[in-house]
Length: 398
Ligand code: PLP
Image (cartoon, rainbow, N blue to C red; front, side, top):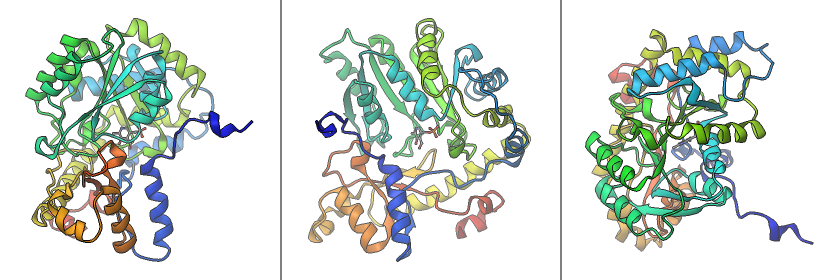
């Protein structure tokens, strides 16, 4: 018997792979690492100190998460987002990635609806959970935003409306860098309500909205929105693996026991020292608040300069509104690129990496069609510690 025939067609995540390729190439040439996106900022000192102080905390924590942490995270989101987060309906997990997967795994059957482009892991996760995946294509003209009309058309034409439909929405977006206005969220909420759609609203970059005006979908569609977040982006702690998931009141009686079931049969709990430190991060003292404000200044400054430079070069790029990515569309260069034998984003990224040492991620990794010449540029390849204390003039030099 060969095991090959029985293995799932799942591959190494492309975002992690580009980092490994950049490492290898860097041994022989300079590489501009715009491929991998992780926070360049150090964890605030008042938070990392707590991690060190609790290094000896070695016991298992409750599966749902340490109660003081859940209380702090719920209070934080109530204050930041004006939404009804409650510790009883909050689940702490090892990163929001696994929490998103836990939601998918909790369903025996569902249609998962994704926006193209959107984050690399949603589709593999949905497939691992055995669900059918559907995609709605967006374009540079709407700055890669899903419209209420598109969503409504899909819901009306659905083949199996009796199955739950789970929309995964992410904003500020990876890879788009853009977000939704209040009016757009209201319009989406009205369609979601009309069709009874369940939403996983991935708001991991919410705190990194560049002007601090992130609006949670849970404000407009509280009854059907599960929200995910965590410390990876705004607190610079991706490797700590601390995510939170909040379940709406209407869904909690049915879903919380199942989600706790998935959590208890897989990860058991998030590491104890990390949970202690996370409580302090979510308590959001003055040092942490100032840190987030400076992060926003830095990201907005660098993201906007990068987008301007690309637009001036004829590469259509939406100005970033949050997070740390741009999604330039090289369509305006199609003719010039074709003369060099480049017709797809994969070819473009491969040639940029091998010939110029510029690492970008092709749009195909985010569900874009092969011939769309769009790629993700992550603009966090700078010294985050220096940036936190830099003024406007110094930021220009980073
Ligand atoms: N969602 C999006 C859109 C992301 O970009 C990432 C990380 O890259 C995640 C979720 C996962 O974050 P976490 O570190 O909380 O698992």
